[in-house]
Amino acid sequence: MMNVDEAPWILPLAAIAVLLLIWLIYKRFFARGSSLENALAAIGFDHVEDLIIPSADEGEIQIDKLILTSKGLLILEIKDVQGTVFGSDKMQDWTVIAADRRYTFSNPQPALYDRIAAVRQIVRQVPVAGRVVFLDGADFTKGVPGMVCNVEELVAEFGEPDKAAAKFKIEAFTPHWELIRKASN
Image 1 (cartoon, helix red, strand yellow):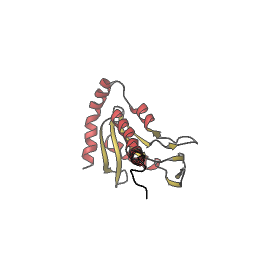
Image 2 (tube, one colour; image 1 turned 60 degrees about the vertical axis):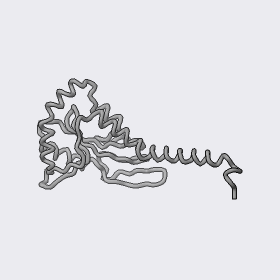
Image 3 (cartoon, one colour; image 1 turned 180 degrees about the vertical axis):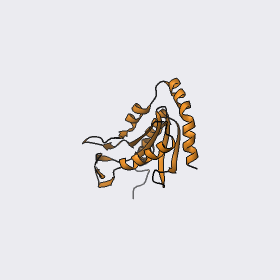
Image 4 (tube, one colour; image 1 turned 90 degrees about the vertical axis):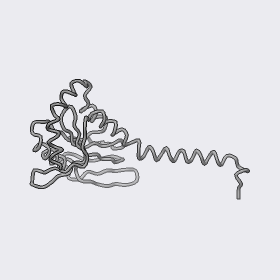
């Protein structure tokens, strides 16, 4: 058996391996979400998560993220997938082909339309939009379906460079935003 004194390079090599492992874990689980968090901070003035409101068909509907932006209310569905995504507006299921596997998930657009309709029932005078946001790692080689974007496109579409104008718009939307909060109780 080798002694540490006989191979002084073992401890520095082990330390480098541990640091590399920590960096990889950070990149995989924390750094990816931070770009989304930065984007939400750039476009949003307030937000609600895990909101349950009445739906159009007398039931209830859950909204994962509802953001108050200077352009109105924005419903987000976040998809964290790695690989090539094959999906279109008319496909019932979308497919992801990754390096190690292939899987499908339901087209998220119909549920997003339902969520938009439910929010519009409450805040009739405020623009309501919805987006399915794919985090880094998703690649649409056959075209990007409607209402689908990445984090950078989300900021480009819903960001407001003029903060004074944004504040004025937000003040106008605030009473409607409060209606959403009340409807969720």
